[in-house]
Length: 352
Image (cartoon, rainbow, N blue to C red; front, side, top):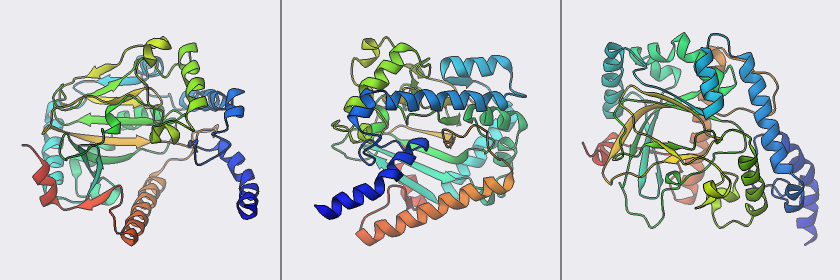
């Protein structure tokens, strides 16, 4: 109708400007999802531009990061460092964070996807002030330089304590994290410092090595997906987090995935623009890790600001967003996607 056409006309400039942000949904933004523009290479242009800008910012943050680590991350798309902490510090960290999961401080929030429950405790500066070992580990200059380099930004990642419970609920839907996918069109950094051994039983991280490289196979896959995403059957693909269809790796000449079955005290950092997922797991298993994520504005040419004030601000913004989501969900009579649970409920899920 006329009102709908008028609204679309008024929104059109905003849809266009969103091309220069991290917006990724092919259904929410008709410009991003426009088949004709993507047939002419719009999506592939965004992918290339975001990766080039990230490489430029990473170069500016390379000081103090060993050359072999920089090269490995850029080449493979991940960095895996076993025995990251000294045995003494790791033992203290594990004991401290196991107590956090059981008793606090900090609230436990849960997300349910398929038959998986994921619990996270936000380790904001106020919570860390009560956790001296975790604060010491996360304040280490070596770790901070490495995370800033991999994130391409001076702002530190937002960090949680994460516990994943596999097969912990009845569901007719598959866990979307257990399929190969990419998070978005731009480089994004996530890290795990595993507090427990990760094996085939409890869902090892899987990653397609070198899938962050903008070679012909990866770009051809991005082009193919950009033409089908808007009408795709998978809602995550529609929203710009492309799922890797069966046979796509072979079709586009990409590597098979690697499963990271690693001992406790392993630091894994991954660019989740690369193809990745959570590996298959046995029902009733779980794994505990220090987990962090950084996703930046893709087209800013400089690595931005750091500092403790900005670090505190980003946690305040996240907590305000979660409070808003809780309020909106309560008004609809449902739970928010990341809702607060009691620690009694958390312990009931723990197979140990």
